Image (cartoon, rainbow, N blue to C red; front, side):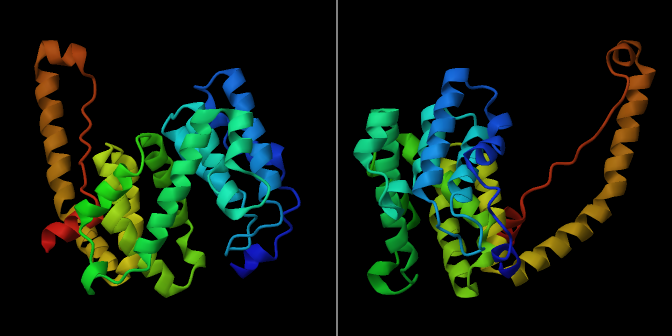
Length: 276
């Protein structure tokens, strides 16, 4: 974190920030990408002077969130909301009204809803599991989040926000890392699964597992590596047998020149949970 704090970040401007996500948005129209660029400028000026714990300009966070949303091929309103999701709560330069005036009611609705969800998330993360009313059931938390809005894009932006925070968790104090990781496993990974965002869910679980219980994560990784090595000959044998069958069959030989077997590995956290 200290090394990043010493970096000269003067090269970070709206054009640079936009360039980091531009290629991800090829599916959007020229007009929609122009609107995203305008939102990048608004976020840059709103967060001017703010820093992350790592020392990076704070605006790099909402831009990364927008990039995650673009990876999910979300519409341009959701990408814009990702760029602006912290501008009202964390700055004095932007209001919900000014967002609506520039980008329309849909973007305002998403940003406003995400701000409310963030406040709930913050209060939940400060609770200690197992201590009376603070021990909130997983299903109750999911319903609390989903009931707060009829706009599912609010939750999608929040998931992208949490994913980037999990990717950059190393700059925080150990106790805070553990608390955020546990909250991610309790609330956000199940929400991602609920929405069918399995790639996001798997990465959230992997990162949260690594930070919440690093010793169990390391043990699972070692066991997984040993198991993979033991199963490798079986995979090679299956591939060779299938290749031979294809080569011997005239129809299969014409349709399939090469057999490749790709073993599907279950995620570390899923393996750990099944192991009990």
